[in-house]
Image 1: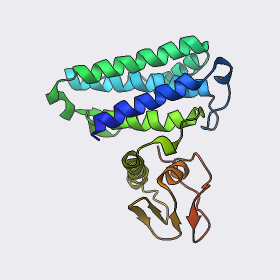
Image 2 (image 1 turned 180 degrees about the vertical axis):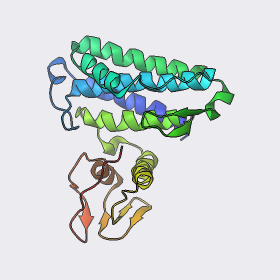
Image 3 (image 1 turned 120 degrees about the horizontal axis):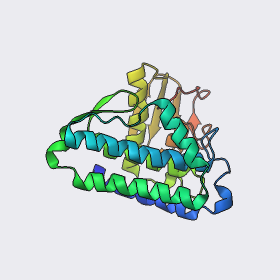
Image 4 (image 1 turned 90 degrees about the vertical axis):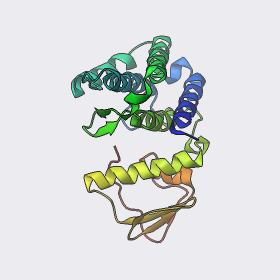
Amino acid sequence: MSRREWWVDAERALGTALGRLVPHEYPGPSLLPGWSRAHVLGHLAGNADGLTNLLEWARTGVETPMYASAQARNAEIERRAALPPEELDAEVLAATRRLAEAVAGLPDRAWDAEVRTFPGRTVPASEVLWMRTVEARVHAVDLDAGVGFADVPGDVLAALVDQVFGTWARKDTVPALTVFAGDGEWGSGEPAVAGSLPDVVAWLTGRTAGEGLRSDGPLPSLPAWT
């Protein structure tokens, strides 16, 4: 599958998770510590709008940051999290639609234009599709609505492991361990950790404590991956 297909599939999975939620579950805890399901949805809406801004930057050449500031981003998450469920759903769907329209309308030449992510990394606009795939896939799981990493295609899971190790490498925080999952191997050193790709991704992204994994030593504490 292409990255565009990965992204489309990820949005469908997010839609499935959203459709399974009932109103009284929105204030309940997500799998992301400190955030309710409503906070996760508020973040997803804001992320879609932020990535739309990056595609506008690529299309026009006019610098358009994802968010005005960290404070503005956080305030918008809180605002959306406080909305009634039906209004929050509408904002998530509207933001996702705006992103889809921006993707469809971006000229071929603009996909190579350089934009800057919220953490400050310069990437081609084509990276937006993968950035949204990560957000939609991981946070669909965080909604705790019956969509899990086992529902994610193996090639996307392997790319998520690449993403985690790549982020650690950029921050010079790669822990000493070697991970084996699927047909892949990541890292170096001990302990050696093995398991299914869904269980490995759940652990590497901080969604589990390592359930389902095998290791020849104690599992290490993992640094942040985002």
